[in-house]
Image (cartoon, rainbow, N blue to C red; front, top):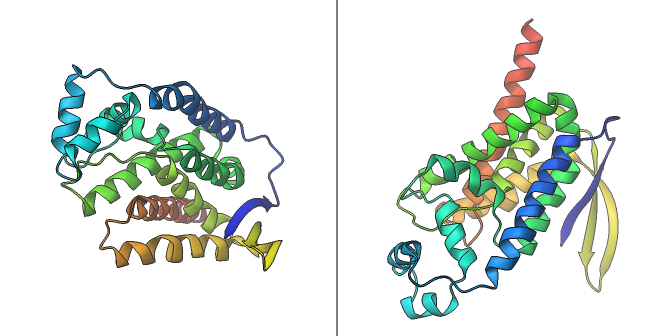
Length: 245
């Protein structure tokens, strides 16, 4: 297991937007995800009928009804479904997560890589990049699964856009990576950012995306790739624009 846990150098200013985005995602998880995950839905809710009608084609209906929670219906309503695209869901899906591990991994990457990109873009530019990158990631995913009724949720597409920009602007920064190969090896090493992020794009996402024909196995590799490419394009474009002035 290889887990990034920090990077250097860090910018001199405090990354207020990065912190605010992390706080918002955590607040949604604590105030919505956790309590509603323990509550059974109202069986008269019309959203439940639509939920069963759409997802019943992928799994046993009896299993669905026995295990569905109120939060499952929130995900179904506010996650992005390529088969029923919604402008509202393009944004709301970015702040919903499937579980604690999903949230924790995303927020760790945002904390590590967000501050440098926020410093480079400015607070407003960083926020717009985060949101626009998330939207691009979602739409890229939808290109390869246009008929899917399974909701896409999570901040990873937006964060991947930040990673793409980081790859262009800070390739020589050092990323501290925790290596956990128990019981053989447990240590931390410093690796150039371009290698860590290149591994993230190619090995963690592009390879499984190609091997699974773009569908993945519960992980939206297409969204990660789309977000990363959006971040690359933004950083490259801004470099060209600033260099031509």
